[in-house]
Each structure stands twice: as structure tokens, then as C-alpha cells.
Length: 136
Image: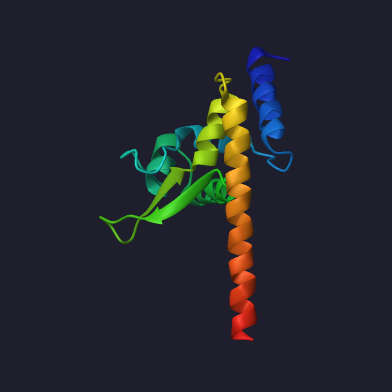
């Protein structure tokens, strides 16, 4: 196995350590590393990511959808251009990046970020159920 393939396999193995359901492609891992945290002033757009990585916008959109479904990324409307959407990495996504990079102390931060994201998901689900019950 070439060095590049073994390095890619090692990264993907670390991704599975993050979350066994996080079956990310190498493209998704690369995009996650490209995303900046909210408030950093360096937001990405789908169009910008498409140009930077020479990929079609639908391909980038699907990859971002997967990252968002895992809690690693989120979208926000661009306040300067209503037609555009900004893409950021979440705190969980930042912790995943640090873990994949082998940063010291990243595992503890990752576990805390995962716990916070799962709690947020639980609250959102409970709110949805409550709204549905109220509407019925």
C-alpha cells in the first residue's frame, strides 16, 4: 500500500473513532478541514468551496449536507448577499478536526463537543414533538 493510501486509511480510521456512524469520504474530511468556525470572519460559501476544490456545486452541497447531519458543519444566510449561504464548522467540527490532526487534549474536547451536540439534538427533537402535539 502506498504511503498516501495508508495515510488516508489512518485518517478514516480516526474518523470512525470519532463516531462509528461517521463514515466520511476523503472528500468530506478535506472539506471539514477547509471550514472555518463561525465568527472567525473567514466564512466559506458553496461557490467558493466549489472553485477552491474544482468540484461541482452539487458535489460540495452533498458533502456539506453529510457534515451538517453529523453536527460537524452548519449553514447560515449571508448577511451581505441574500442569495448566498455561508458554511461554518461547528464546535464539534472543530473538535473533530483537532482530533484528526492528533492535537494534544483533543479527545477530551471531542467528547465534550459530542455530548453538547447530542444534547442540542435531543432538545430540538423534544421541541419538535411538543410543537406537533400542540398543533394536533
